[in-house]
Image (cartoon, rainbow, N blue to C red; front, side, top):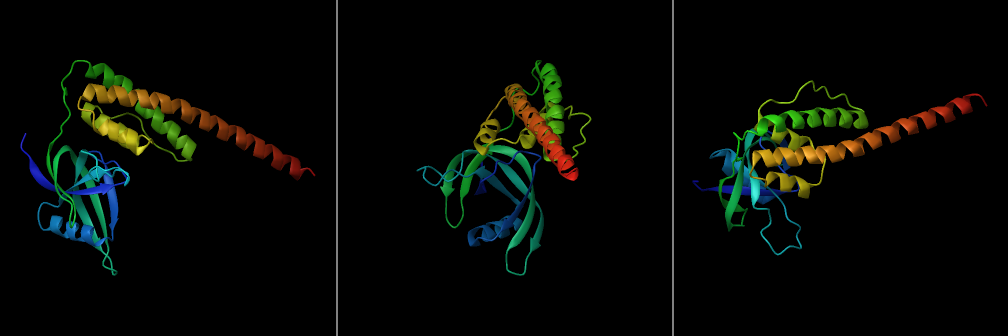
Length: 222
């Protein structure tokens, strides 16, 4: 695979292809980075930032390229930018860190995208995806209308990864999975686990609502 040099932005988030990522840019070196990107390809790489205590490069080695789709220049010199995740990549080498990080990267596409087992995996994962979103909406008090999941396996895998409300470390683990069937299986497993937790949260909320309603009714009679 052909490698290229790309500005890298370590953040406390994991970006996936197809994911929208708005950012407020205020630090000098990243203001410069965005201006440099706008004068070239309008792209930079997002990598999950490592804890400062680790004596390692400031970001993980698997990330996703981001396309700058809109820029708002603020009166204080800061920027509000809107980006979209494009493709996964692997960092081969950190070329420099000043004034901002630049890495030599190569594409890290999903593998086994034509595997026979994908038909069954997509069917099963779609069910988990729809149920998870509905349960999450119930717990958050938000109506999430999802009648069906994406039919394309790669799109479904990335949509599931974006939707999951899990730790950044666990999301980074998903981003680093090379095989599409394995990624879907892992996501379905996580959603099955989270579905149980969400169901318990929903039940607890309903029981609390009944309890509060009972107290209010009792107070209204006294």
